[in-house]
Length: 58
Image (tube, rainbow, N blue to C red; front, side, top):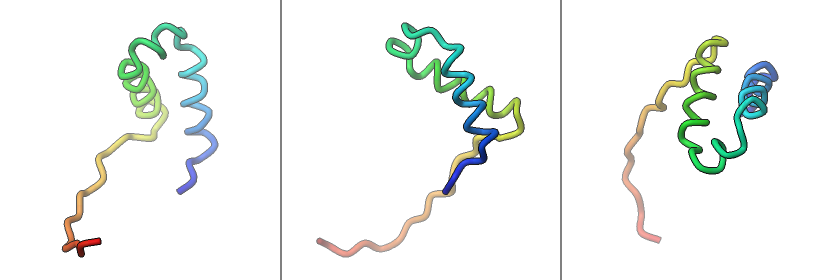
């Protein structure tokens, strides 16, 4: 799956605006900022449906 160029630009801009200390020490906060920025730009983050299927032993 390839992301639209505009979504990649939103992610990059949010990362560039974040302080290095935030990225290193609080990556969850940075991820929340990116998700919020994507949502504001019209790219909502939604959970993928979980599918369960029988699995064979290796």
